[in-house]
Image (cartoon, rainbow, N blue to C red):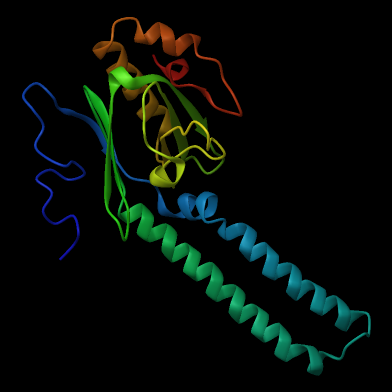
Length: 215
């Protein structure tokens, strides 16, 4: 039985109260999540450099091919195993994660071994950003006014390097511009003046204001 088998509504800890409804629901794309959170590309690159170095030693005559082959084989095997393990972790993390935007809040449900559910009422969200990556997926960080959640508690659904003041983040979502528009519209409808606050929010570290993509 799945740890989420008893959810009354997928991704939510309970039924929505009267007047609240789901605006959008989705999950991270596993491949971008594995790449940007578990750094599969960096690990693959590290082992590729080791293999290239061994082949360079062969090409320059420092070692014979017969002597280098066993080491190259071991390096390739360990490298493939490491990348496969990290990719599997990314797939599991994406499978266990559900992002929900309602007309009143954002809910993050995540956790492979230790399931967690984080509610973020719109009244606690000061601003939201958007970063679209080359693969088409995107991240939406949330600047919150009140939270007792730590960086480790939110990981991997948190903006990198914001340890002192963690920012929850919807990571590796498909069609990020569309999701950001829906979020900006929902916030503007729920909190008077929120659209103006989004449009005036400063961009930082490659993140543009979520409201800047609104129609």
